[in-house]
Length: 486
Ligand code: FAD
Ligand code: NA7
Image (cartoon, rainbow, N blue to C red; front, side, top):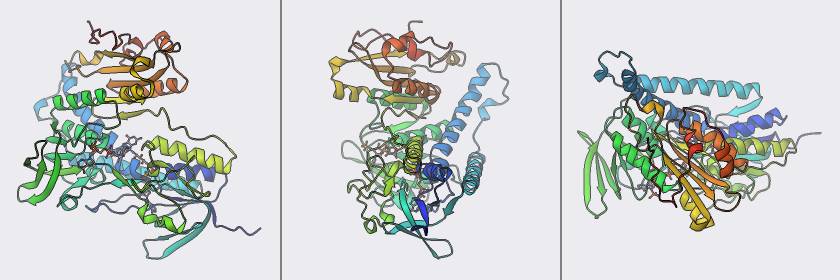
């Protein structure tokens, strides 16, 4: 029979979610094409195939975090007996770091392309848009339009950093799209925004030795447990990050000696300072505008331009969406990947498994890391009521902190449980080294209906920081001191 459509699935966006769905579909025998196109940032930064995570997100962020941790480790090593000549002159070579990071990214871009080829997924380097509900067009580099038809279409175009609407912001500021490939060292840096991206960038820049300031509009890490968020900010402050609270930028202007920033402080007074780099981390805008969704009848939420899908299906039955483009879903790579794979299995392998967006663990690499899964204390209070939850908490001392006399006053954890018979664990929060590694396994335990008695019956691995989550016994309600006794 003559096929009605050129492809079984066309994916708009070759990032975490789109590529995972495309590869899974192709493995299941579907005919698949992926459109991926990167619009350069206002500073002109552009990158290859693979989306945000690989090029300007998780991967370069984690590598720069690691670079900052290694700087710390050099000094710790001296305390452990390593002979490091002239330790005072140890410093980062920014150019070498950014070249190493960019080389790794280019190798991932290449492997991704080869992988698509091997899996027979057609890669089309063009900005795709809907011509009608089953037809996608995209202008390619040679100026020609590539038009394809598809039975199913997946929207996975993600988002890009926002700029504030103030004079000079776009001309003189950068975002996370630019920082990882900056050719010059960033120098004295102002970061506007105290979400996880702002804090992580501030953390590694300070760790690399740059004078770093975070401008906070209201609270730290909105959406995260606020006690943990404030401990993270205190810890960063102790390491040398400056915080300007309750402040809003007003004007950004290039001057002979740097970038002049005016901001309004909490008293309504205008303050100013000069920086070498101003980085905006004030949230991300969904890229639905370029898609001409109206040609396909797909509806967006007007507030955030995102798509409100049910089991990743939009209001148009054969058009789906995964990843950062989804309304009120966690903006995380593994979420996009998992949802994308499950969707392709439902479309092409008769699977009925749907994506569970609850109890997704995450970590802020801040640089003392904060990992969490499940509910924050505030959310648990709202959902279950204060009388029905028990919070266990503890400060602890990582063994490896003793010899170099590293400050451990912010190594803190908390376990949120229900108070009924089962004492189900509904949230776990951990600040300390390798928090991401620590929390990952506990996320599986929570998904398997972990209870507090089971947690307590687990035997720890000594000496680790993770075992502290098992040793916890002091409730907040008891008002006992959660500081370690020894
Ligand atoms: P994306 O990965 O953004 O991919 C979308 C792709 O579509 C892009 O290549 C885009 O250029 C392209 N595109 C857009 N419009 C079109 C169009 N019309 N036609 C064709 N192509 C188009 N998540 C984590 O889990 N852990 C982390 O540690 C982490 N750190 C992060 C750090 C930073 C600085 C940032 C910015 C993000 C971080 N994230 C992290 C979030 C993670 O990167 C995203 O959640 C993830 O990349 C979303 O995947 P996606 O498939 O929805 O979109
Ligand atoms: P987030 O997590 O949305 O955080 C944005 C931060 O920027 C937050 O602290 C905001 O303060 C602040 N913000 C927002 N708009 C402004 C303006 N105009 N001026 C100053 N400060 C501002 O974004 P991220 O970039 O960290 O993360 C991107 C996404 O990844 C995010 O959507 C998460 O879901 C995951 P507020 O608390 O609103 O006062």
